[in-house]
Length: 186
Image 1 (tube, rainbow, N blue to C red):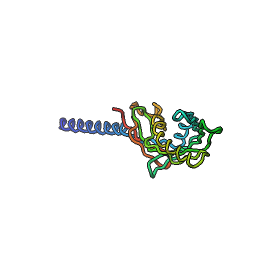
Image 2: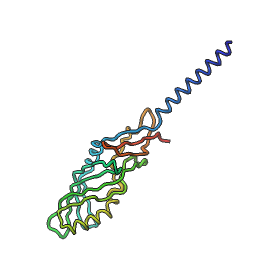
Image 3: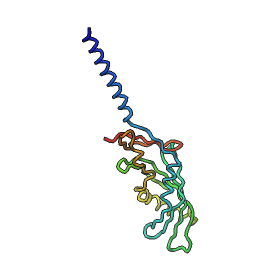
Image 4: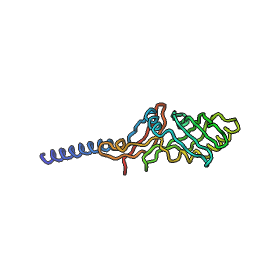
């Protein structure tokens, strides 16, 4: 009878230990973290204004970024004030440029990056033909401008939870920001 009780006690302890281990395993599984739009906006504002020379001809200044989310297309849009100084004009053209892109996670950085950018709107105070030509040039060059610029870079402390290191693996756009899936690093 005593042996039977011992075996039941051992089996009960083993079952309890398995239950505790499985509950701990769920703590270290994937997590979802929301990055609100205002946090994304603040990160972008720190990177502007940007001055760039395009094709060794145009001096371009981009400032005042305004980020918006397009969850139905799973894209984000960025509107900027733009100033273009061509060598053949005495005054700079001033206006705005808006482009959008699909977001992806670069786990090696770890950061949220933009892919498939496209110019949606360009108005700089030039004549229509010049703006049309600049829009074509901008569309062909925007990928090189956007390629290495993170929309959001994770703070290393954001990727550590309960002593476990996480890496971002997936991203979803929502109406209020981004939802990033974090998985334990292997």
